Amino acid sequence: MIVIVGVVYGLGFVVNGFVSGSKYKQAFFPRTSPAWQRTMLASALLLPRGRSPAASGLVLGLLGYVLISLTNLRHGCIDAFPWSALFLFLLLFCLLCLPLHVIGTLLGRALNGNPANPCRTAAIPSPIPVAPWYYQPFWITVISGMLPFGSIFIELFFLFASIWSYKYYFVYGFLLAILTILIIIQVCVSIVGSYLLLNAENYNWRWSSFCSGMSIGIYLFAYSVYFYAFKTHMSGWVQGMAFFIEAVRISGGTQR
Image 1: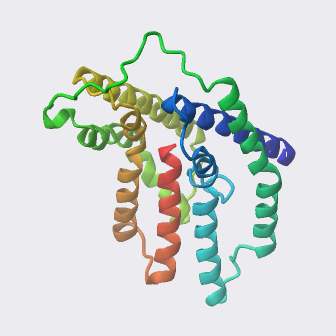
Image 2 (image 1 turned 30 degrees about the vertical axis):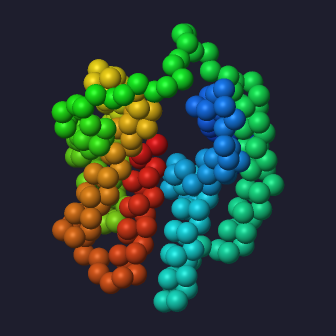
């Protein structure tokens, strides 16, 4: 099982590099895409994707685990992350995952770097007309996060209680249904947000479509602050740091 997970995760780096490399080159075509090497490294190191150091982005994951481990060692806790496992993960990442990501990026730039536009595009961008506030990308992004968060709001209490309040959680079938609904709603709000921008003749829809589904992380972190303040009995900066590091990583993973 561990071998299968490792192989699938390694192949995911190939897919990640292929998509990021091809899309970045298409965005600048026919010009030469500047600093594509930095984009390649950023997509491999910085993008949050989960709760483990391997899945939450190398920088974010390692920073969180190092802070928690140093704090636990300082106070004599036994729950410190083993440094040997951390070194083994870094070695595996540098020797396996990063080369696969580079291969995927080069394949994406070579095989899918030229955009297949259905029509000719103008060399000079058209001016974007002034639109009402509810057509602005910022407000579309902020409002779009409310609907996905509303779909998981009730279930969040039971999930957080099982993590931080030592409660049992056993309704995994219902959790799968909630996750499916969350994915569908995130897709729908991204589509609607892009439609509103295009309807307002704003062609800068790419980042807005991404941020519309990603903005749920803001509401999720705000709920984490509420849960810590009113639903737990935690105190002190040690427990607070552990809680909020996990909250940031969970919020980042939910954005993806």
